Length: 246
Image (cartoon, rainbow, N blue to C red; front, side, top):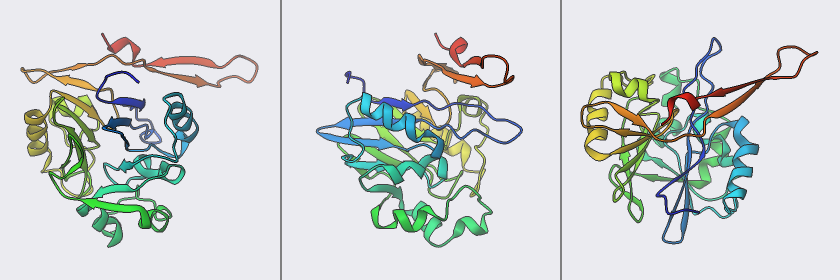
């Protein structure tokens, strides 16, 4: 490990399609004073690369001290199934799940099958609670009632989850897709600008917030795709995002 305040285990990718968003979120590793935490866990298709990447970082998936879920959508909490440790969610988010508020909201991204499995491991937090030394929970309701971020106080870094889907939304002031309230987005974004100099969004590269309101992406290795177009030819290799970083 380096001295960096956080490590992106799996990168968020801001891509949608005719079949919807791909659901590739940022999975972030934090190590603080002997504690090992993971912010968000990724979706079902991320399992092998997640476990391989954790192994390469010297992290035992069976010995995590805490998993922090930005919210209970499957692409952010599904891999808690293959990881150990309690799962921390905001109190409003867990109430949204337990009381089936997601049904009334017509939110199709909450996995019913995960609820009874994860229930014994749930721990809830409130806005402003310190979850580990220097790591403070911040609620940003909108995308879901309990959408949350994790603020690295000393470093000025905010892990925002889907309260900021991507830099495109953030710069334009566009709310994320909302199952609770679109109207909270402007206040959420203002609060983020006050808190953080670096934001790690739910589905995009980390970026620095500049004084003029613009953003600057931080270095990203990009991500490769293999597209099997023709059974008689090799797969087509595509690289995403590389052209955009400094």
